[in-house]
Image (cartoon, rainbow, N blue to C red; front, side, top):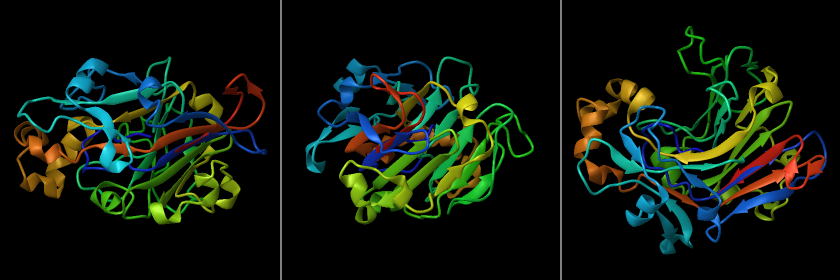
Length: 317
């Protein structure tokens, strides 16, 4: 799951993240589970410069712990807390970029971006209420406008297609107005499930009162979930365009997306630029955090040890 690579209204991602990967048929089997008991041992702290040029300084593990940027939250059943600095005025605010080399955004590793692909599962900027789900690839991957309940924004996943906007990729917007930002927080979060197969990349979202029983029981069966909010399928060889995926949680501020769209949103009334607002208003980021109950990964098909040969599926709560 990914908290956006860019600036966004506070998101309470309290829920279950499910990642699924399989071939075609057969039950999904749990391969990884990250809960408050083992979450901080399963991920790596990324402390290099923000690839999206945001107004953040990503903290290493020691800094994150000392500044309480990561913790468990006793008031929320010890859910995992991933936050950022909200105390000091500064040009670049300490924040978290958390990586696991398994499938919430998912980023292909081992090659220059976007050769091995990127899957943005939860993402948005500024006061956006609806979640944006996006794929980023090189040339040769586009999607059909059918098979999902969301709104198609752009069909070509190629980041070099400047006719639809450079680096935009193929995007689908969730139809649920409580799938991102403040409305998502008010609904106490929910569950996001992502299935990656050779045929399609599909994403489902449920509010807390609508989580399927098979998800809560740990026996996910996507065939019973109905139409996904996003389904990326069409003229795209998924196995070729999406490889060596890493799971990443991060929040960044301003940068290549939010910073450039600041003036076109109601945020412009708060400060002339995104950068000025971030530097001068630390208290605005008190609620800019994730609360994560668990991240669970399931696989189906022939297995080699704990790795699936083909598809993986993931659920995040």
